[in-house]
Amino acid sequence: MKLDRNEVEQYALDHWQDFAEYLKHPSISSQNKGINETSDWLVQTFKKLGAKTATKWHDQGGNPVVFAEFTGNSDYTVLFYNHYDVQPPEPLAEWKSDPFTPTEKDGKLFARGVCDDKGELMARLGVVQYFNEHGGLPVNLKFFVEGEEETGSRHVSLYVDAYQDELQADACIWEGGGKNSADHFEVLAGARGIVSFDVSVQTADADIHSSLASYVPNAAWRLLDGLESLRDPQTGEITVQGYYDDIVSLSKDEQEAVANMDFDADSVTETYGLKRPLTTTHPRKELVNGTTLTINGLSAGYEGQGVKTIVPRQASAKLDCRLAPNQDPQKIMKLIEQQLTNNGFNDFKLHLNAAEDAWRTPMSDEFVQLALKIARIVYGPTTKYVPNTAGGGPVRPFGETLKLPIVMVGIHYAKSGPHAPNEHIRLTDYAEGSYYLAELLEQLK
Ligand SMILES: [Zn+2]
Image 1 (tube, rainbow, N blue to C red):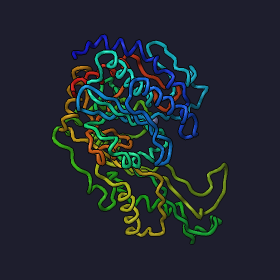
Image 2: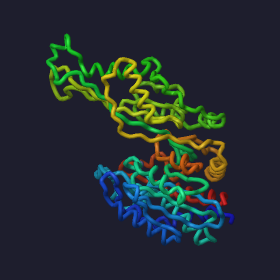
Image 3: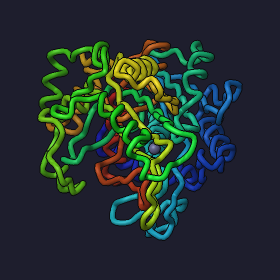
Image 4: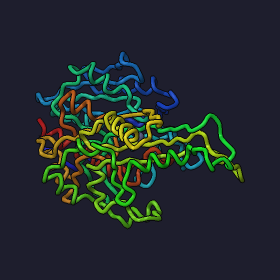
């Protein structure tokens, strides 16, 4: 079927309200709110749209995963990943409308979760409904909608492992895409990994009078010396042995795409009010295939008002490393621990907080190429290809276990404000994104 762009876009605009109830459920995973109601609503909605299966999985623990399956007019199967949980709406005083009352104003739709990531699923449901009314779905569709993305997706890989048969597909369309700060549409094909951990050191049983700093060790200095020993202060290079070894270099086409990514150093400097120069001369490459060692916070000794002259007994820091595809989070933490020992800091204790693997589908993949080709037709030649996001997501089980090529495409824009008050999308992006998806499904059959 040849799709009429105006008709599909108008349909999306006329029908988003069919799914608006989704935005009214305060499904806040971190506070355990609204999880059952929201997942129930999803199951009912999938059934109403004609799903041959629509059910909740909860046997692997955590919040239930909603799974649905639709039969289309070809053998090709697309699996969608979305999440139905949202961040808490606070601070409430900064919202101009109620966060759980979808509010349309000046061509924008405001609600908690409308960008991250309920609006994307609504657009997908709208496309299903459109095809239902216009000759049926071009391909089979499966939906995997989890309920704890905002708290770290801790059970996703268990569900993917347990339900490999149900999740069989030919390709996977992820959430979280859209337009960048130059308002150019981006097609992404993966995510970086992360490992987050605490480092602590204790040098005495109690804080000590600072006059005795003349001879007692200081935990704060010791922590700083240890952390300092992990990087070159001139270049910022991480000096942990083996740290960069597993990074796979980008293909020639990927390198070219990275060189063409939108990045405006002046606007970044202005946005964040940076007081120092950028830490790299090749930020695009660092964002995609680079790795970091970040001190998130430091804590030691007396931090209150006025004078308290002590030598702190204990010091700790919170760190995270953003990891390129193929870097193993647990291994990276081990390497850091080993390097600290080698550098003479074997009294440091490391405690793992969270870890998530990176994953990237190669740009040469057929499905990635098709998604990009159609994006260039729908969104024009300014469309950018970004091999993977700088952030994370539970992508790897879908790529590795299910062996699916993955693209991330969506409906947000740079000012959508996910996690912030007045989170919103532009309805024009919602309409365009719906047409893009319909066209992609149509050409996959
Ligand atoms: Zn989020």
